[in-house]
Image (tube, rainbow, N blue to C red; front, side, top):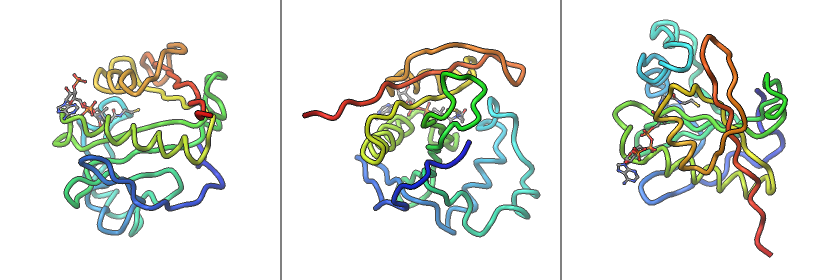
Amino acid sequence: MSDLGSIAWPPEPIKTERLVLRAAEAQDRAAFIELLASPEVNTFLGGPRSRDELERELPEVPERWPGSFVVELDGAMIGQILLRRATNHRRPAAAGKADLGYLFLPRAWGHGYATEACAAALDWLDGVLPGEPVVLTTQSANVGSMRLAAKLGFTEVERFEAWDAEQWLGMRPPVTPSA
Ligand SMILES: CC(C)(COP(=O)(O)OP(=O)(O)OC[C@H]1O[C@@H](n2cnc3c(N)ncnc32)[C@H](O)[C@@H]1OP(=O)(O)O)[C@@H](O)C(=O)NCCC(=O)NCCS
């Protein structure tokens, strides 16, 4: 994975009905540690990282790179959206395409926040990189993620085995700008 390249960053915070999407700030560090150390969040992502190690190693402002959005609810971080370029994706259908990832804190699951935030991030992407398809890879056993992908308009390209599990590769076709 690499970042999206030469786009203007950070953008103005993106406001949705209930959420704000913005670049990471120092105040988000504790929530990033919670996210990356959570066994629940990382069940399908290779497992949690050690909290002690994260405390030691995370920079003062973690994850501040073009395409990394902190999702905020009532002033506090509840998740992260990652828009990157799948430079070295193992499946040729995805290699080099824009790629969506998402992680939300368990207390924020089940309210539609991930759907609302990802839809806004994809709208933003359509604005800065018009006409680009977006890919998404998730374990097919990750039911919440599979449902989210479908709600966001991703359809199956293929399934493949990797990291000891079946993976689902989905794609969202490019949005055609209206004339
Ligand atoms: C994947 C993940 C982001 C999904 O989160 P989520 O909260 O289940 O996702 P959604 O925003 O789609 O919300 C789900 C539910 O909220 C419910 N909901 C409650 N209030 C709602 C509202 N006002 N509007 C919309 N939905 C609402 C919906 O019914 C929806 O359930 P459904 O999918 O059965 O219809 C979350 O499980 C997660 O962070 N997992 C760990 C990280 C991970 O595995 N990421 C995938 C790597 S690619």
